[in-house]
Structure formats: C-alpha cells, structure tokens
Image (cartoon, protein in one colour):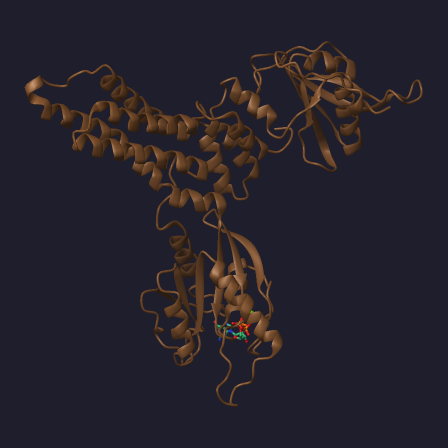
Length: 473
Ligand SMILES: Nc1nc2c(ncn2[C@@H]2O[C@H](COP(=O)(O)OP(=O)(O)OP(=O)(O)O)[C@@H](O)[C@H]2O)c(=O)[nH]1
Ligand SMILES: [Mg+2]
C-alpha cells in the first residue's frame, strides 16, 4: 500500500484543497505535530484518528493514532491531543486541525501518509502562512516576519521579527501611503490648490505634500543600514603579523579556547571561524594566519609552502570581510608591514587592536591614521569590551535599532523605488512638468509601497517568498 501514489487529483482550481504537513522539525522529539488546513481538515482527522469525543472548536481532544495494518486489537500506535480551530478563527482562516502526537518520525510519517490517502495534499513550504496572507489575515511583511522569527539566531533578531509580525513596519508605511494616495487623488481630480493667478502657491502645496511622503520614506530607507546587519549578520576578519595575538583575541571574543595559541610565530596555519552575537548582531569571526612578506635577509625564517598557502587564505578572508580587526603587537616598534596593511585598508571599516598593552615596552598608540585604535590585552582582558563596542559601532554605523526598521532586501528595494518616484515627482513639479507626468512618478511610488505589503505582488514573486519558509508553517 502506498497512499502517496493513490491520491485522487485535486487539480480543479475552484476547489480549495486540504493541505497537510508535519510542522515540527525532522527527527525525534517529545512531541510532534501534524497540521491539516482546509475544508476537509476535520473530516480527514476524524477518519485518521479514533477520537474520544467529537471535535469542538478550541477544545483539545484525546485520540488514538491508528495503524490500520496492525493486527486486530493492536491498531493503536500512539495517543494524540487534537485541537480543532474552526474557520475563520484559525491561523489560515480555514478549518485547521493540529494533531500533537509523540515526536516519533515514524508515527508522524504514518499520520501524514494516511491524511494524504484520505484526500489531503502535502503542503508546500510556507503554504499555511501563504493561505493566511491570501486570506488577508497577515500582510506580506508580517508573513515574512513569521519566517524570520522561526529563522532567528539571536534574541535581537527574534525581537525584530516579533515587532514586524505585530505590524511595526506596516504601521510605519500605512500613513505615508495614505498621504500619497491623497496627493494622487488631488492631482487626478485636477484640483487647484489656489486661485489660477496664484499657481506658484499650488506648486508649493504639491511640493509640501511630496516632502511629507518623501521624508519619512527616506528615514525608513536609512534604517536598512542597521536592519540589514541585524538580519544577515556580518563577517569579521582578524588579521595582522605573526605572533601579534590574533588567535588570543579571537579566543577572547568567542569566549573559549577555539584557536591554538603558542609563542611561536606562524602558529595559525589556516583560517578558523566561529559565530558569535554582539549586541544581537550575528557575526562570523575569522581568525587568520599571520601576514608577512618573504624575508629579504636570512635573519627571519623563510616562508614555507604551508605558511604561504595560509597567507593566501588570510588575504581572501581579508577581502571577503565586512569588518576588519587589525592586530598589532604594541610592545614592538611599528613594522612597515603593519603600515602597508593599514594603508591597503583605507576606507574600509577597520578597528586596530594595539595588543599586548600589558607588556612593559608597549607604546601608548600605534600608527593607525584614520582608524579607531584600541589598547587591548588578550592576557589580562583589558580593552576587550571596548573592542566589542567598537566592532558593534562599525557594524551598525552607530544607528540604534528601532521599531519598523527595514531588515530585508526586498523591503529595502521597494522603499528605494518609492523614494526614487517621489524624488522624480518633486523634480518634475519644480520644472513645471504637467501633472499627468508627475502622477506617473507618484503611481510608481504607490506601486512599490503596495508591493512591500503584498497588495500588488505578482504570484510568482509570492511563490518565491513563501518557498523560503519551512514546510508545515
Ligand atoms: N603579554 C601578552 N601576550 C600576549 C597577548 N596576546 C597574545 N599574547 C601571546 O603572544 C603569543 C602569540 O599569540 P597568538 O594569539 O598565537 O598570536 P597570533 O597572532 O595568532 O600568531 P600567529 O597565529 O602565529 O599569526 C602567545 O604566546 C600569546 O600568549 C597579550 O595581550 N599580552
Ligand atoms: Mg594565530
């Protein structure tokens, strides 16, 4: 018996299919949940299980999970708690049933296969949330926040997702959109804001209304600098000359002895990575092999093949990193290689760790023009917190987290398009271009804002977005 292949086709577009999925993660667990949503959710569940009482909305019910192939008298394979949410008061707004059994992958799989045998279809990734969105229960930014909440790796990311799920971004966009609609309506109606002979005042009025939309949109656009790093995180490379204390600082930042530390220059041969969160920002820290040039005389050891390959990887990590920590041994005279390294990093987000500040010969400052320099000691722990704060400042550009900030590239692009439209509209009014043309720019902005919340998002784009969800959500 293979129920997956005996499913009747439900291709009729007029029929709402009942979907089913295992909503808990793959693998074993104390509890595992199978979810069904759609018109047949309750009736399929009633056939799937031996319910100890009829399904009543909002009331959990005990039920036996049945293995139909077992011998008579041994059909019960598990016990489950079944909750029925009647349309429209459910996550999807459809009839929805959650079957919480023990988290055995085999039992959950049996439940799912039987549900499909009884006429349900396997849910696509994100399809439950997509149905909630299509029913108007969530807008698109909120639906995406469900995914971000599930994917959150730091508490700060989860908080951001929760605030977006609560509608923080939509609430920021809606009033702006309202004003834009008003402006469009006024221009469409051909209303004069002033007497005919005072057309200058009319333009001033229009420009004022454009600014009232453009300025908050620009402010929103600006939040992406912080929102993006919160959402995506950053890679940070720790670089510098051999023996400067890179691995020691790396270990201090990741708060465990991850990388090997010895007094021998050239200890780190390959890059070593570790993920941490600073101020809620996910960071991938990369410790690298010490950078040095081939010696010009025999006073320094030659670079062997392994070290050479390590240096190549260090340079790659340096090129890929969004933020760079240059570690300098401040107990030694400034080395020309350090100077050259810093020169090559001009314009990039760099913080210099003047390390080994605990040593007697340590200088007050190292040559680090244009970069913030922090005195650190990986041995005493001095300056490590200051280094963390400097990293956070570089990562965020100093901007604080705020409600409704943009965290997704899709949202950012929508807002940027809207800002562009407003800027063109402003220029057009200033150049006395006819209002019909100004309206085209305003509609471009409106279209972009509607796309942000999902009112005018094309189906294929929607499908792409929901495909990034997990199955069962
Ligand atoms: N006194 C003092 N010694 C330090 C400090 N940081 C590192 N060291 C010592 O310096 C030596 C080299 O440290 P590492 O962390 O391995 O240096 P590295 O930059 O990773 O060296 P390579 O991997 O060889 O490039 C070790 O003996 C450390 O204990 C510091 O702040 N103060
Ligand atoms: Mg090292």
